[in-house]
Length: 145
Image (cartoon, rainbow, N blue to C red; front, side, top):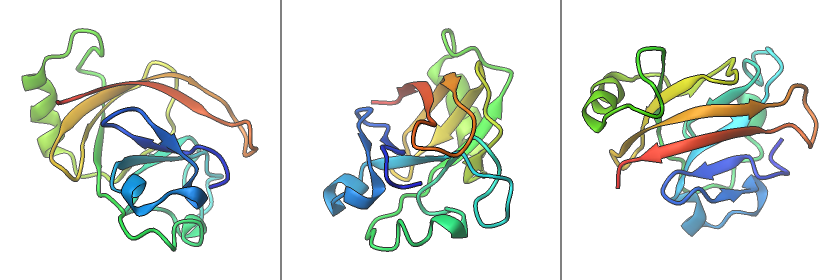
C-alpha cells in the first residue's frame, strides 16, 4: 500500500517505503510489490510491477517520484534459479516485454531486465495473501554486475 517496504533495488537488495524515498533511492528501484485485489485500479494479486507501469490505484503513492524505472519481466519454467547461466537469462530477458508479473507463487522463477540494461532472475521463496500491512513477498535475486 506504499506504507511499508514494498520497493526493491536489485543492485543491492535494499527495500524502501515508497512514501519516504528520495530521488537518489528512486533511481535504484526496479521492482514494486503490491498484492492487488484483481480490480482494474490495483491489478492482479501478488504482482511485482515496474515503477514506470504501476496500476492507477498506486498513482498517488508514487506521484512525487521523479524517477520511475522501466523493468521488463518474463516468468519462466525453462530455467532453474540455481543453475541458470548468464547467457540463458540474457536471451529471455532481452525478449521480455511485460512490465509486471502477477499471480506469483512459491517456486516461480522470473527473468528481468532493468532500465539500466542489467539482466537477472529471481525466485519466489514465500508470499503471503490478503491486503494488509503484514503482506509480503520474499524473493532471492541474482543480477548482472
